[in-house]
Amino acid sequence: MINNWPETDESKKMLMEAVCAFAKSEIAPKAAEIDRNHRFPSEIVKQLGEMGLMGMMVPEEFGGAGMDAVSYAMALEEVSAACASTGVIMSVNNSLVCYPLLAYGNDKQKQIFLAPVARGEKLGCFALSEPGHGSDPGGLKCTVTKVPGGYKLNGSKNFITNGKEADYAIVFATLDRSLGSKGISAFIVDTKAQGFQVAKLEDKLGITGSSTAALFFDNVFVPEDCLLGKEGQGFRIALSTLDGGRIGIAAQALGIAKCALGASVKFANEREQFGAPIAKLQAIQWFIADMSTRLQGARLLTWNAAKKKDQGLRYTKDAAMAKLSASEAAMWIATKAIQVHGGYGFTKDYMVERNFRDAKITEIYEGTSEIQRIVIADSELNNRE
Ligand code: CAA
Image (tube, rainbow, N blue to C red; front, side):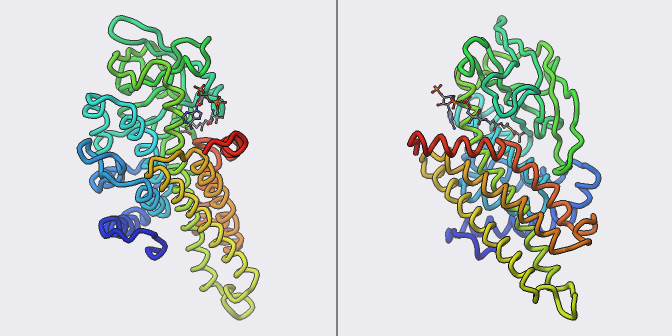
């Protein structure tokens, strides 16, 4: 697996070896239990923080590890291969919380909010989606009104990953609905503020170790120095943040796919039918070949998007391609993995059953496959490189 990594840089290689070893020895053995008990893996999240994995791309001066996006994608793949629930918790904190605080926060906000989140001492969530605004957040209904010293926030959000455990939420709300997406602003909201409620926790098909919450804001006071960026800049902040988020979810999908492929190879070599391991059957070999090819193709698209981000180039289309191809590859590979396992793959005794359930969400959150196609087509048709 390590041979697949393109990096020759010694420090990155060392980090990856440490992540790989940690994922194998500390995360993977707990993944089935986390899934079965719908348990938030707080002890693992704490360890990820200590290893610098909760704020990987944040400079060291703000509590992060100062790594690049390619390293982030590689580390997140390894963590997600061990446990996809842990993968999304890490992805949201890094991509959807650390990134906007780093890119749009002022120095004070970086010291107060970013540093503890990047160190993994505090956890963040990203509150954009609403019951009536999932794929189309430009028309969101959460409102803020100006009051002395800040704003009052009202409304509800749903499907918020880390929503139950988060210390801070990046909340998108409108000051003026008549302005459409240009009326939206971003705020850093303390989840312990009066009026901030976790209204519901979703009971889900997969990634059951991470919380997915509906949030309700009842006159939550947000101090004026918790405005992130400028008033009216919120939609741009949300979409540019999601560009990076899509690299994270692509990496999570790669991890799920890698786990399903690895399990299939092992099973095919061990399981005997017609007097020989099923790996000798061409039908199984073709599954394995196609699984491996789709995985590596999606991986290269993901690294390409990450590399462009590192180079400071526009990567909106590349991130959408990475997420589209990795999530659809993960779902396809997990489906074929069950086929390779036959009846055993349909039982909870084999982890491909969990891979299958975990893979589905990667085609939905942080922009459905259909939204990624819209983004890619828009870039091509309007020559946005
Ligand atoms: N970066 C920065 N700005 C961007 C941008 C980007 N990637 N894409 C568009 N913009 C800007 C545009 O330039 C435009 O600005 P101007 O008006 O100044 O020109 C503005 O944003 C509006 O652009 P559009 O007209 O293209 O916006 P739209 O309303 O038509 O939406 C969309 C486009 C691609 C469909 C977008 O709404 C979208 O990505 N939807 C999916 C939302 C999504 O991914 N939600 C996931 C929720 S988060 C989640 O899942 C979290 C979790 O917990 C895991």
